[in-house]
Image (cartoon, rainbow over all chains, first blue to last red; front, side):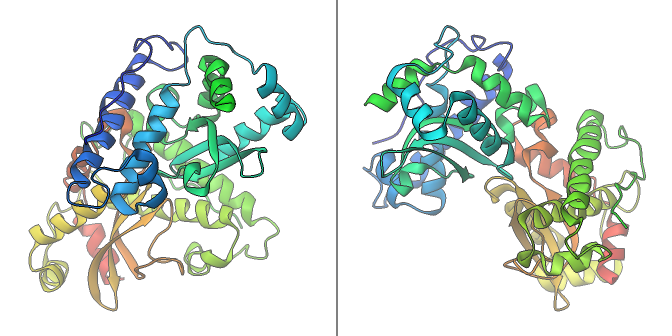
Length: 193
Length: 199
């Protein structure tokens, strides 16, 4: 069964001026699409021919892992934005962030630092760890917290392709703008699920 | 003594249209400049001040990540600007061409191996032509690692290197890394590569 590129749940220009339409066109139309194509080309004749993305993330290595995990990571990333979203955590998720980080401000500082300091290409994540606590992790390249038994809630893509057309070397500026298009309703649904 | 960002031996516009001036300026002043400043900061009080960059590379795996990453970034970009010049010979000749033929069979075979290493390096990193016990080999390294480092899978003296971090090509080529690699190949100053080969 071949994987397909999910459509974005908003227009290409919906996140302007924080994430440009041009960035989304390449990020979704070229990078995300290439990962889909690559994993589809790599799996025939392997034990992963009929696997789900989650199974690939847990068990595959090399190109199948890299491309399969990047399909998952990008879908997860694009789905959490909205031009009209809820811009702050609420309810049970807010309570859990307060409980595990002390405050929303402390969580945000910690997450921003993780996203800014990941060296090279990769991702910063808010996850629920195996003890049920919220935690921030960094992964390199295609790394995905599912591989370590952690449940991802929120992610920031810090591959340069995610921000270079808009912000060039200014990754911290991209991270600052990332929060302005994040829809916390999506994160709450993931947390509650 | 601290490390200094070297000046380029040519204008930011010199490699246009294959590498645009805006990419050159940001790459040199912001990225290379950032590695230089961060390396100096990371070395302060480390006991390794005064070492050459090559000496630092040899023990990079034993040093804090900030020294390995920024030291690699400093060394690698120094090499990159020097072998990428608008002038010089556009084809390898003489002893270098002989060595390429001996190790790879032909210049075309070297180019194929080098391009493949550059295109298939997943994420950020570099592809290299290096001298390993007097034999030329092609390798690639993640992030800002390089073949001088104790942590490199393939160790040796780099004679040619291509930066395949997206910042090296994204403004001009976006997702088309193969087009950038092809452009790079046509900008190599083989006189400088020969100088490095001869050591």
